[in-house]
Image (cartoon, rainbow, N blue to C red; front, side):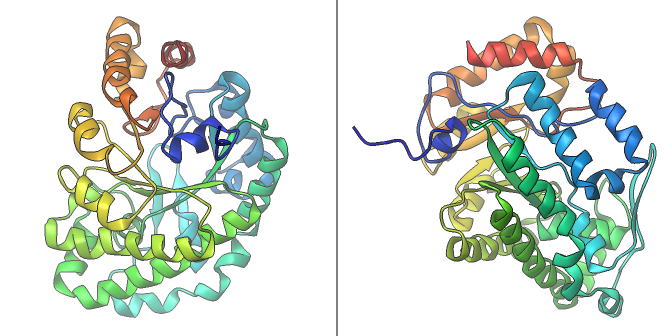
Length: 345
């Protein structure tokens, strides 16, 4: 009998193994829905301080593992630590979200300094090392970063937006100039992810939250190609580490994206039909997802039915149970417990 690639169920699923009861973790499993998180967040003073204080970041990462025993744990941090490390001013306003001093043209790139990134992010790597020591032996550790396009939308717009209009204006009006920002982010994101692996991350996830906002030509240039380049780089530097991509909103482009980027697995947003994903995406490789986070808020029989549908469809192939996006703050912790029991049978 061939020895499994790992004793960790999550890693085995990423290698293509199919389980009667899939491994489970949830995006934003460490977050405001948990009272213990809110208590620790208050101690930190600010959100960025929480991200950059290893003792506190380790604590909030471990909280959902202690409570629920998820099969994987994801480093507690934020995708915007990368522009912060580059030298762009980043801050978080309570009730508003992230704010940045916008960079809207090539001249604005002069304020960015890639040579300071890894030094600035040392606390994040210390958190990863701490987690490898503290996590249960059966729990896999996921490192992560934002995709170049998604991070760029915040850097250019100065905040989140419904249409990523500022980034599109630059990308459409001066595509080569905008490409300079994408290339910079692709390079430093590769540095950042490799450093997480050196510190102990066993899996990497790349979040492209705004992938679905671009039309086909720009999607290929600014979403698909940077991830393809990152994947090629990581295959050389850390070939044993699986990479999961989450091109939220990509729609029918999920198939092309999965095939061409060469990522190990793909995470599905809520809009993706699991029947289609089982037929089209799982033959390419493992998928992850994709329960609507608001079903986790509602709970009850409707959530149960949705979970059962996913188990019946995606459960026949290589699959990691997750949400179609992150847990929302109003999700009752007891509904998360009910969800896990349903998935694990």
